[in-house]
Image (cartoon, rainbow, N blue to C red; front, side):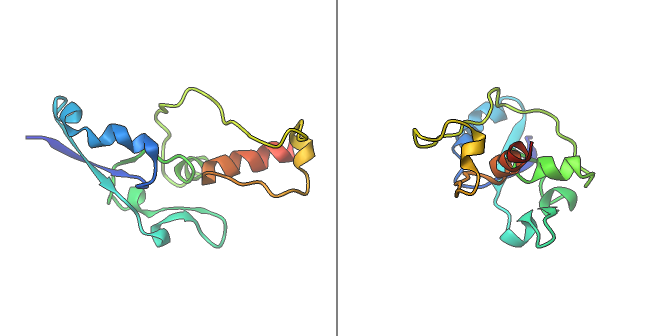
Length: 126
């Protein structure tokens, strides 16, 4: 009998490809179920605080999404950051005339994830 694990995630993440190979997890006694949260359960609330309901109420056990849970853990919302499968930093792409972060002052910056935005905002304040 396989132990069922619910993973809070977003369907669009390319990193989810590893979780669709159920045979790999079954060899280790696990069945992975991907859980896509409702917008009201996940992300940032109007107060700016992370919303992580599926993890706190037991709907899901783990997540591979970093943008909301890491700030929640740092803010003491009852989560622990256990591990990451990423071993590199964040890349920033810009037009050639942009030479450093200061050159971005007053300009629009596109973000691919809430975690990236969270880190960029702090870097720009430094």
